[in-house]
Image 1 (cartoon, rainbow, N blue to C red):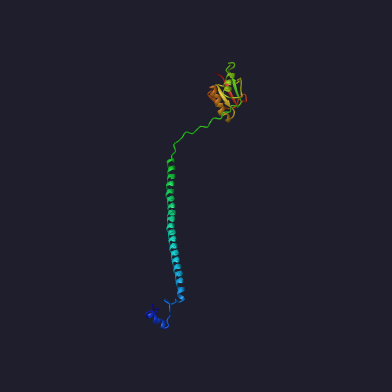
Image 2: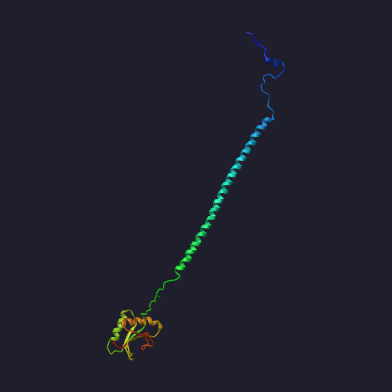
Length: 201
């Protein structure tokens, strides 16, 4: 077996002094730098574009939200404006209904009765014990300072006399209790605040 091989084109390249065993020429130095730079720049541009897109989207949503807020804000005054005239209209309507009030009876003040007022019952009938009986009626009704005596001067009818305007209600109460129709303002014989003069039963 022989070690020789038939001659081919590789033998000619070797004889001409060309590179032996080298299949690829070495790359220039700038190709090593250009690829990372291009990738870095492309990535930066992509990130910038994405941020710009997101920024525009966010501002758009805020812009769309602000008109709705302003619309609601503008709607509120209109609602209040529409409500206030109706309220004022109803308020103005109420006085018109009550402008002609129905006449009502004037309530009379409560009578002021002084059950501690000095009261004298004077008997001018000649019937013994009549003044005491009438005085007892007043005592049973709540009067605390009642005296009985005989009458010297004789009036024309039974009368209850009071010496001050503030005793008017009290004198009327005494007259009602004793069944006397006449109540007068004047001086009393006994200097009591209220004096009952009885001349007939």
